[in-house]
Image (cartoon, rainbow, N blue to C red; front, side):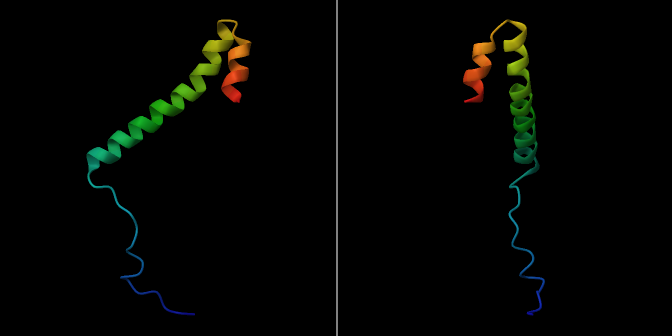
Amino acid sequence: MDEISDSDTNNNAQWDSYLTFLLSIIGAAVGLGNIWRYPYIAYSNGGGSFIFVYLI
């Protein structure tokens, strides 16, 4: 087995700034919220056929 040096373990990708990290986290949270919200809204409005199309 080869030993891993410190320079080999520091090749991870990093965010350019805190703002880009924050915006991506907000975007992920909004996107996940919409994924959970749409089937509920469609069901409450009597749109079972919309849920079928959504799942495809």
